[in-house]
Image 1: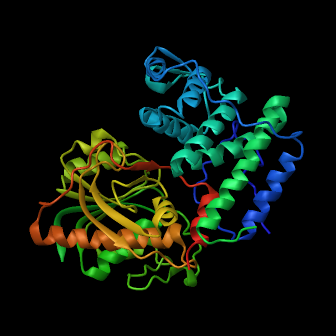
Image 2 (image 1 turned 135 degrees about the horizontal axis):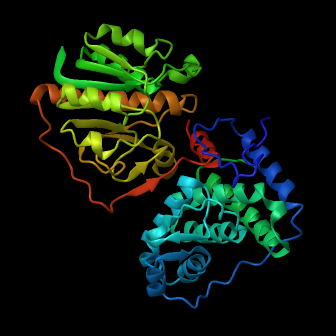
Image 3 (image 1 turned 90 degrees about the vertical axis):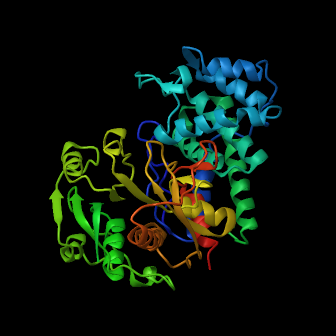
Length: 198
Length: 234
């Protein structure tokens, strides 16, 4: 059985391209669940799902994207808090965020106007951003069955598992919940495809 | 039959092998062939991974440079950058009307070379505009158990050029190597149909203009989704 080797290294330091990944059959799911359990068991329990109310409006989000400096953390809070109410208006922002992560596999603390990446490549270690982004894409996938969002979600869980020891206590519990959610969503998709993976 | 004013721009990839062999089989020869970049090892592909009923199966053990020996005008440059000066200079001097593009994965063809006036023909292994981007074969299997390919003229924005022809293909069996065999085989099949259209009319008269916001952009598929996609096949 091949090990699930997508979290062997710190993925913020050395992002994985996932290009031409190998196929191992059903045993791949056993390796994946084993790897996730190893991380989960060290996290000290699960947090409740995050609350989704937001002080920010959809207009605030548009203004944030068009400001000279975009504060990623605030943008994520605003996006997360508006997903229940304004999902159609958020579609283009979600697409931009997907592209941002898929291209670099990192989140910067700040971006320039229009989400352009700054030249400072050292501001990618704010782990709260990765957690919040995972919570955003989890929600987008569940609400809209959007595969590109699920793809980002899965890569974010890999990234977070690769740096799990650096998370604080509360963040660890949030990751634990996300790991369980990832497992449930993959199993659900397998069932829809008539596949028995567990 | 030689296609005048048509250039085949080929990186050393399995896709170029599939294209070259499919053209030979169809009796189509581009007037010019430009191989660019360094020769690389060919991935090991088992014979059981190559069987796709109804489609021409390329022989990936045949090196590209051997196949293109059957073409008359062949040039080589070692620089593997499609936007590099060597490729640019040759395309600019030859001025083909149509260029069959088979580049390295991940390279984006820049405006400078696209502005030379040559039509860059690209075959995308996804039904456009619904499936833009990368590894779309896997996504379309997951979403609708079907696959497609689209022939487009390259534009500076990824997969947004005008669509010349689209075709649906039966999904592969689970044994078939999708990355190297199925993906390249369906692209080669559609390429031949498009070149035959060009041969008949000498231009592309019917096409579909894509709207900027149509469809979805996909990125390299996560291994978990890739496994679900493959395992869902018979």
